[in-house]
Length: 231
Image (cartoon, rainbow, N blue to C red):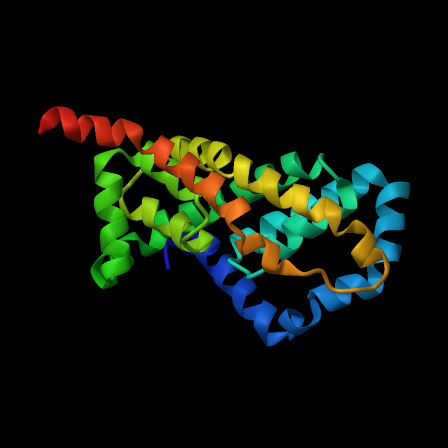
């Protein structure tokens, strides 16, 4: 294998290995709300005594979770709100954007042609939307967390959307949802401190979903207006 080919495969290989290793090691059974509740007092105490180190550990763990496409984003976001409060908004948005960028690069460098050939109806519909206006369409998908985060990381790479545009739309688009989750997570502080598991049903309430859906619709206005003028 030529050095250039090896470099092309390196990042995707690392991300796939991380995802497989997470489940093979049984970490998916360990990292849970029950585990967090049992060790919350120690985690909170460490974060208070070593604030900046806590920020760094949280940012790194969150970035890797997103890059490896691990099903931990909601848990980490809510836990970040409980542990760090409002500063967790910046940590989560920055870490999620970093991890998403790595997935985007991996899909763009290795999987683009393969996924394009094997894309199902779900990916084909998303790709059609990106052809209208990639930036605002991605912004809408980020504002309304109705689709898997990992899927929205990959599909823009299939459309050859520029990395900078992808990162900006991702960063801006996840701020409102992240702020809502952090607000909810701050209320979980006392629940976790008692070693209990929070009620996550609030995340699907209309009070949370409707405002985010409204923001998503607003972000699509440029595309709607363009179609109306062309009609």
